[in-house]
Length: 540
Image (cartoon, rainbow, N blue to C red; front, side, top):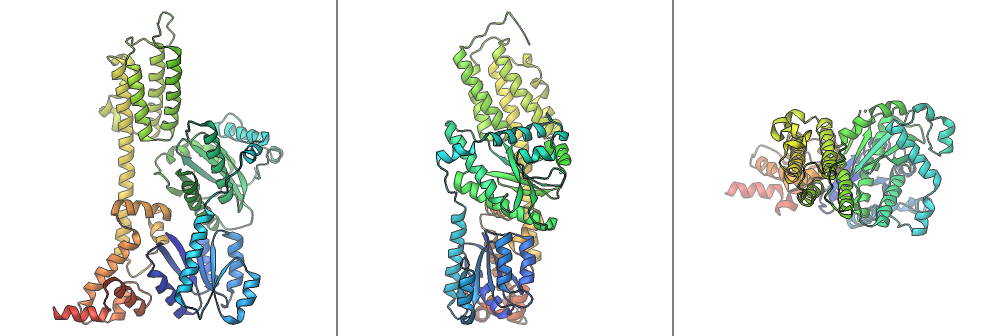
């Protein structure tokens, strides 16, 4: 879905354009209107807008002045000017990057300009692929040193006192350590590729997208904390209020997620700090932030407040052990990323491979078991699942391998523990999703005559617009726009059976901007005008 803002001080033009675009079902549009450039600027500072359609000559602030602000703060927002013949040549010379539609032209011209703008937005998500030479040029010692220092700082291996202004300048952090900063944490599935070069290319492409969307309007840096988390630290280039910055970062996050999916077929959940914090505050809360992100669904975007036995004989050949250790290494990535399918598949493979070992004193099998069990214990503790799992899985078996009859049972038990952890996590996520969708549906029913824009609905459940669209469609089988339109149509048919109600009153109750817009909507859905439908119902 694309968000479109219509700006014109003339209500008739505003309503006409709104009515025209509301009939478009592909692509889906989330429409908003503003009666002045000043009001439009306020909307732009609160939410992400993809396309602005606006007049040029307006009181207080002209469309040209608003355009300059848009270009500076929201460079990926597309603009379509509605203009008269007298100012067309002048505006075209000054702003060649915008699109223009003469007010005297047909409605098709507006739709054509809008479709072109949306196509440009889609194309802008695509990366310009770097050459191998350019990739190699990016691998500079300074970048590596900067990342290593930040990882060690966030892991607690280096003290905050070491982050001096001089060091920040030498490492080119593009940050003032003495000032508060905004943080963005990206959590993605472990990008494990058989080809080392393919994995490096994917990583560099992801870095390029981070720079494009998060550091285009902010000073700052980013680093890969581990294979599942990337941390972005940023400070605003210009003095803006906190709410505006958070809205800009949220919009950038949505674009990043789209571009990541389009270019790499990858998904990432994003957490944006709701307020700027000191680096010290972030370091204290960082582990908790990462733990909370485990509960985020794929592509969710949120903003929040902060033994040694010498006589033991080893039974597996060295080559086989190396292969199994690689599987164990991959399993740790999958567990860290909470990738259910991959985790359970690797556990099945380990169970099959290790069941041939007869001795329960085999050091290698014991090492693999203890490594996995310690990771599972860590997740049970971090997710607060001890009480829920205690009697379901016999949790003490995680600590004592001697309670298992053989290695097949032991690793089967570990798989059962993992399945139970994922089941409880999925139940929680599913319940949160179902509750959110039901709240949205309830809000729509109760506010059918009010603001049912995607932006406002997403605000009610504190989800990003893209994520709300996805979970609503998955649960209901239809889009939010289809749900609203179906509801309005059903309600309109019911109200039209009451002869005491005027058509305008029905239009107002259903949240239509005008009686004419309601008539076009009803005729488009039923093939009849509201009056014709009313007469037909009378004759039944």
